[in-house]
Length: 248
Length: 312
Image 1 (cartoon, each protein chain N blue to C red):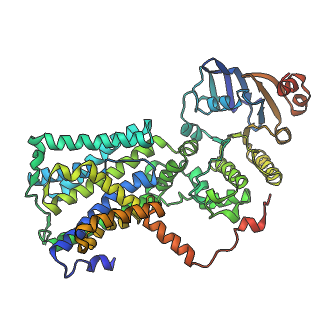
Image 2 (image 1 turned 180 degrees about the vertical axis):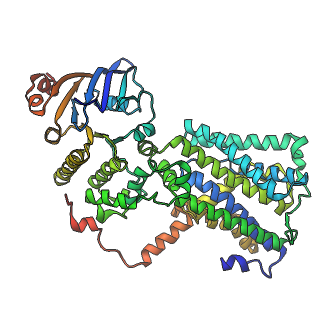
Image 3 (image 1 turned 90 degrees about the vertical axis):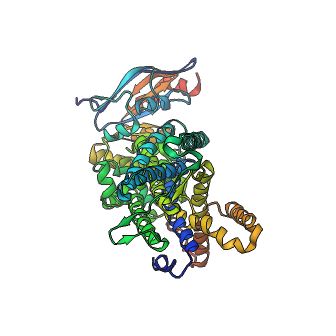
């Protein structure tokens, strides 16, 4: 088995008296699509933020492609090949869709000085256009991102996560607020990226239909701990999981 | 461009002096527009950078150093001090950052007023020389205007290059969504510091031109109220829009001159005009222009995505 792209060891995080994450360990293999589910307050987002360096865990380590990323800044993680989306809308509203996508890739091209004296698009327009086409956003290319519908902005947000060619993408509730037709398209696109580029995904999602059909493995969190793990069909039938969701 | 060349011809010395002031304050406002308008970092200290540039240039030129060496030294000093002033911006934002920069401006004013041995204290520094470049002597106001115009055009072109480059996109990313920008690889700490440093350097360049224009500098010319004046130029013209601060500087510097015929009422009319503008068009004069342009232009077709529907 290949070395894990993401390796999380014994991550714990408390907020006052609340143990948001309590000793979680998990490995994600190259090319895997892992779903991270759990009831509200189970610690999914806290774990995500600990992995992505936006929260400092009380203990534990995170490795990406064998390199420790504990304490590293989000911009460093991006340069190590980690892309992400946010639960809330996270585009640059006063920039065009094209500029949003180019910004997502430009910091990975050349040095600081070459980005000042080089071409204004950092030579990325062609690549950005292909990604925009892939996400079926071509007709919105020159629109301000802030003028798009919620679902369209979610697509722009997702597209940005792929612009730098990441090996690992963490998606935080990508289906939230997206209509079923658009969601089907998003799922197809994620699966295509996974198939064609071998991109590894970790997906937090409440939409069970979406996550069960997209992911090859599911990890279930409750009260900051992993309570179940396995293929979607096994997790769906797991009584502990059902109890956790029903509050049993 | 042609208008800028012919504007001072046949005018009185005073008019040429006012036009030169407009160009110089435009440079300072262009710099603040990068820090505030593009990168979203509030700064109430632009006058202090004008002061640092002005005093550095004044002291060096009085010591016999040519302006061409003194001015870059002042600009470089402002770049470094601006970089240092950017560090608090990594820790605090919004009105807290405004207070930090306000405190810096006050600190500069107090140093300029109290350190007589260096700055001449409240009496300031006088008899500041104007630069001469071989046959081109700027001692008279008209050549000095053209000299200022050249510096203005060069600095504006340089800023145009910066805001149109990937740096400009990163500055706007910092303003609109710093957390997202950081997650995409933008080093938001570095870009914040650069926004302060470059904006401050432009303040320094404006100061390096103020010294030879007025030929006399004293601390109150660089007090907090002057920073507010530069801020007003950026906001009135259109913050985050390239030509906004140039237009804003024209309004703040030139409008009071046009309103002088109203005698005692001109400041009141001027203040009322600014208040009305801010209330009815917070995006500044360029924003008014764009709004009018949108109304005059034929209506656009329905948004493409509405016609196409939510395609998968």
